Image (cartoon, rainbow, N blue to C red; front, side):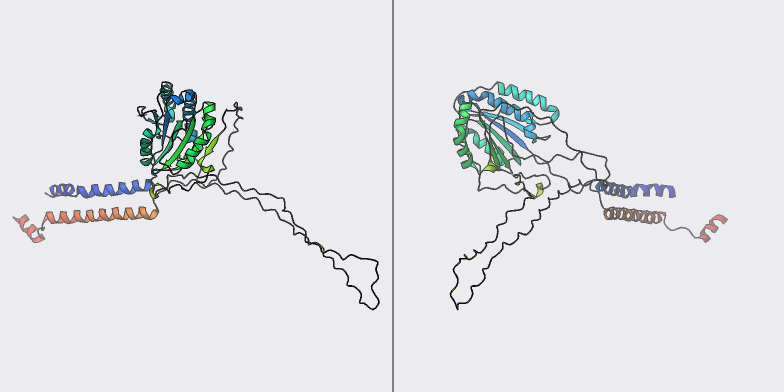
Length: 396
């Protein structure tokens, strides 16, 4: 009978043991997880190409622009998982080209598909950018990060950005030079959280891309945390061969002009992932040449003549000559000491206090379970017969 009660008791207390195991496993899993998980922001790149009849003479530049940007990974801005779109327009907008998701192992296949699509484009009819702009701005407004790469002749007006006046003025000013060179104008507009914050206007061979990419992760090493190892010097790259001079030499950036708009601040939840593009600060020139010191003015000495003073008059005062003050020696300013590169923090683990709290909770639940087991066993057994009753039963 006692064995039967013990088996039932174990079955009744099984949920408590299962709960204790779950709490212990949760404590260990929380110790291994980092405290903060970085939110991955999407980064999109949208090519918009004008295929009107006016662009037929500039078709070669269109292909060179798209192919060159993709081969360079959008000048190093592409990351794994970023999306690439390609739209065309003339009298209507065509969005039939499928969106591509970037990965290094898919680079060759993506380039092949884009080249085939660009090679099969037909340049005809008139350009109507106003029919494509609503869809372009819809993508801008509904993307965390997007860079629109507009390849056209600059004849149509840009609308919907904080820099419409500046961009349209530059297009109008340089349209003749691009037309005579038979090259398209490549205008990039970078947006974050639905607002365009920077732009560049470029020649196809020298495109500048506003910075929007996530920072690259540091390389994995087996170096101990407290051991500081100096970074190896960068490899010396061979000097590139000088290309032939282009017909049009123009690289215009939104940072070269005065704007009234400013970049929108990143959201609080995206602080860990967002890298705000900003123009590089002007270099500080440190010079050891002392500044020129102007000599103190020297009082003009009174002219002396051979004419004797009249008798009885007091002698003339001695002339006062002021010597120039000596310039204080100029101590050259010490060269600025470069700040040490920050060391990447180690993986965050749970503190000793958190682990101790988890173990205390688990131990308390285990103690409660044991007490409950003892209480149930004693209750199920019922009152035990006394020694007198046992002796009477034996005598019988």
